[in-house]
Image 1 (cartoon, rainbow, N blue to C red):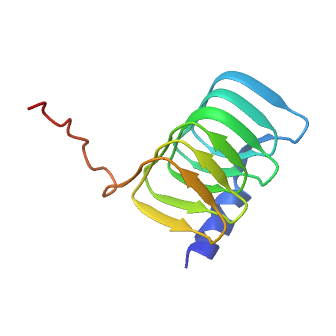
Image 2: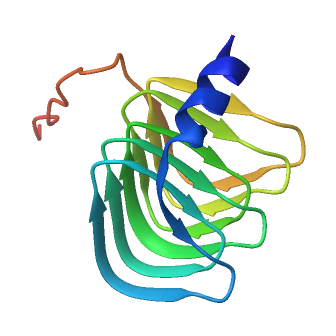
Length: 126
């Protein structure tokens, strides 16, 4: 079921950061993004995010849905579905409503799953 949704959402890609491109700073978008190059800073979109297998992202990430195949150094916060592919290397905390991790993927960090749109409540100190 997700395959058809994924194919449909990535047909409408608004921004492609190619393999020879390096972006430094805060990158904000409303649409779908494909990253094949390097991003340093923060990366935010309300749409879908696809990080290719050769991509390197040293950034805090926020997106509606995401598919990660490359390397990410930073926290990942996804409101909907997060698919972590076998080639992915994530060094940071992950938060998603729905999570899929392929065998071989590396995830070094805390994993939190919350219902879509759930409000995070800070724990009170004792």
